[in-house]
Image 1 (tube, rainbow, N blue to C red):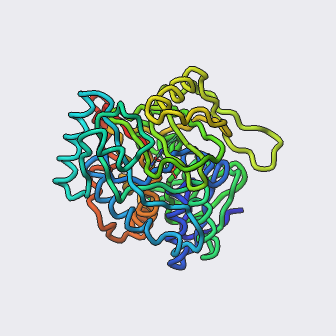
Image 2 (cartoon, protein in one colour; image 1 turned 60 degrees about the vertical axis):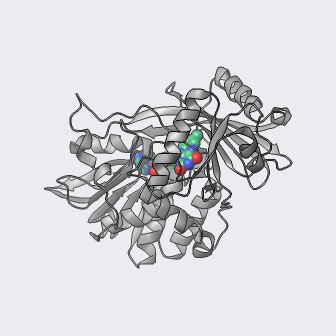
Length: 393
Ligand SMILES: Cc1cc2nc3c(=O)[nH]c(=O)nc-3n(C[C@H](O)[C@H](O)[C@H](O)COP(=O)(O)OP(=O)(O)OC[C@H]3O[C@@H](n4cnc5c(N)ncnc54)[C@H](O)[C@@H]3O)c2cc1C
């Protein structure tokens, strides 16, 4: 028995949910299948910064377009995403970082982003008074911001369901079916689904489904530790990043601090509790990293680490070799669209990713130059494009 749809979306993170929403609202028959549940992986683990600053030039037009969509997303989806637009500051903690941030401001301003350089501590602390007097300066992008990840994905899911999309949770896609050079559907651990178009938005595990089709998207799992405090008095409006990307943080709308480490190698352990109603994957972070995150928080935001911890987790980032996503139609397989490998930047992009993947699936023009995100760019394993630094947050 096979269920028939116009479109199958694999993965109910922000990328897949936003795509299902776009397809369903245009009247298409869509099923979205997730191994766990909406926002069970990166889209729930995330810091959820919505930023344009610090973006690769190829990604900047997408980030700008996404930020425009974020402005009216609550209205469009009919639910609160807790989106707040009060800026992002990226801190310079030493002379080397100072030069690096100043260069970034010059380059991105030339690319048309409203980004300023706060050249001394006084200028910085006028904007964010809780920051340490030891920080030398920062970039400031006033149109950056943050949102709540679970609320955002839930808003996309609810809007997609209202438009008729079908969500299948706790069902794992085992294979994408192809006949000749055409996609015909997917096989899961519970069912068969047929559709002429499949959108792969499975994040970290997406490549497992591509390897049997001869498509090579190398993904390195980077583990990031996240600490969340109880709700406390507001002292910080902006998202804080640092030049090297090894710390980031923000204070949520509800007052909780959410702070993160840089990326480190994943220890390859992921617990999924059996026998619970809604099993989700949990990654336990190393204690040593917790200490580093807290110590850096105290250095940057003195006095904030006395607050109680409410929750600790680690999240995984789906890093490609050049830290740019794959957003493309599959080479030589008609009907397969790929949106994965967001390399720590995909939350902000979610709303525009949904529109682009929808356009690709409908064979419409995506409206952006996607050449930097081609699925074929990693074919030369011996000489893959490399990006040394990644900035989540
Ligand atoms: C700690 C951390 C901090 C971050 N900070 C930021 C930030 O500040 N700003 C920002 O823009 N981005 C940030 N990111 C990155 C961002 O969260 C991700 O890029 C984004 O959420 C990716 O969304 P996605 O939908 O592509 O993937 P995911 O959210 O990972 O969703 C993929 C889904 O596919 C499902 N799946 C996988 N395999 C299968 C299968 N075989 N069958 C069915 N389903 C399957 C999974 O269960 C999962 O739900 C951060 C990430 C982390 C981990």
